[in-house]
Length: 385
Image (cartoon, rainbow, N blue to C red; front, side, top):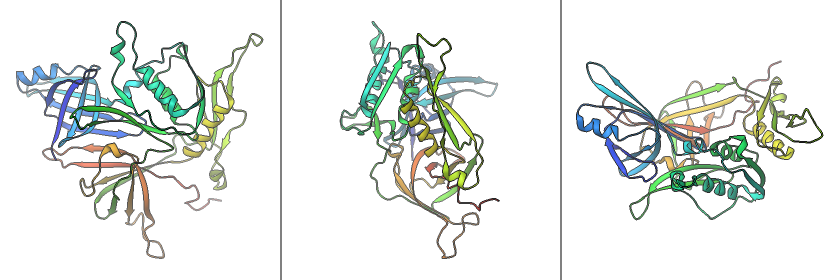
């Protein structure tokens, strides 16, 4: 496969350079921004001229795999390094979602009462792309959100300029709540040959209907890595909101859930009590805080298991714009042996929620590393006395 790196202006999307990069890595994620890195060797004045057109904070790179766009990243950093042998420039970037973390909620108040959470999403994306007079267009990235469809889940939210929070933070909080939703920004080429930026959402999850994807180890899975991390583990979740102002209370305290939401399955499996307090500075409603605590207890309790699976590219057709789709994964080896009935102990359909791509270049072959969504079962291991 041929990878091409076309750099363009963030606002106009007009091309400014096409560079031959090495040591490229990029990834895509659901909700959170993906990362990009790559290096160009400046071997002549023409390459130097093109490199100078790439301005961090102002430029983006479109990653093409053959004729399709596999990712669009804002260049946030460029590092020029030179020695007697050569001069190189290292680029670092993040996907378009990262821009929302650079946009402060700058209206005095954004007040949503009994509004579908997807309509809140649309309105916030719209407001983020309106700048200040006379430079309103400087905030217009032409990120579209389909006007069709809602989740059926209504929310109350109040965001204030004085909280100095970013649109990215507020969107992430809105999505990561009990009965929330998922989103990501994808770039694709439409029927008119134009590059389109579109924020897509899914309730309760993103999931695109695709052909069945089947991966096996041994087989078209090259390697796997499972990280079991209890560094930030918790089994009891509290959430804390904003201070409720009152003329009668001199020493006002932040609103906080009265009781923790407990991860009962973990306690039943003899896990210890591990507290975690999560702050939501804009929340002044106790029910909203309880919804956040319930989300954390249901999705982030106890041990975090992060499976990454490296597959042979093109063994099964895949595109990063299809994150959220399900695939079948089966692993059979000494760590995941066959059970007493001869069936694999690790097998099933799992959602692909992230992908890291390393393009092929001299000395390295192309590789895909999937992050798949699995849940750690606290009763999987023998209960300790």
